[in-house]
Length: 209
Image (cartoon, rainbow, N blue to C red; front, side, top):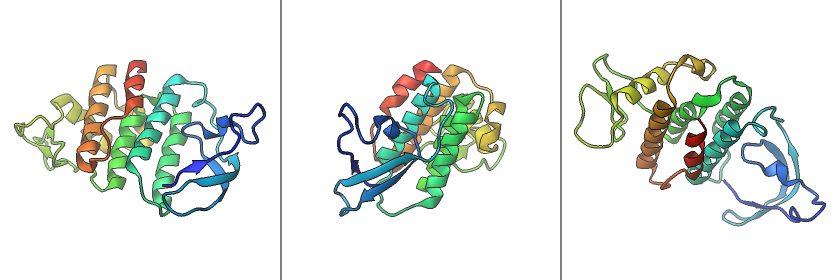
């Protein structure tokens, strides 16, 4: 990941609209390359994908912001990663198109953890009903430490592991259940990466669900 600087966006008539740099927008850039760790200057920018709902729906917009904040805090490599880029853009497109976007973020977190190298493991048996955030395994009993999902959150995680993103609406959960599972998966990613303390935009999103 690299950092860019844009000249003149706060002028009365900027050459590039600040809207282009809204979190979640996929844009094409022409830029002046610099050494890693230094700012790269953008020469031209244009929207690659135009969203129909994300810019105008507060839940979708804040979900996109959560996704972008997590990426900013977790992804630090300089080399291109086409597979990860495709993964992110697929979820942003789905976020814009799906009728009920409530489960998008939690499913994204599961896939994100896989790309980071610590995907939750499948259940080894029906009696494995507790998800251990430390090991990434489903266990048959409470391991006796606080880094664990409760029974309901563990069951919802198991259901989400079984389905593709286009069937997210098949998994039913209440607002509180969605909050608990999302918070648990953020804890899971934080524990295995040690890259951030919190996702501030999630504090806003969970009030909107």
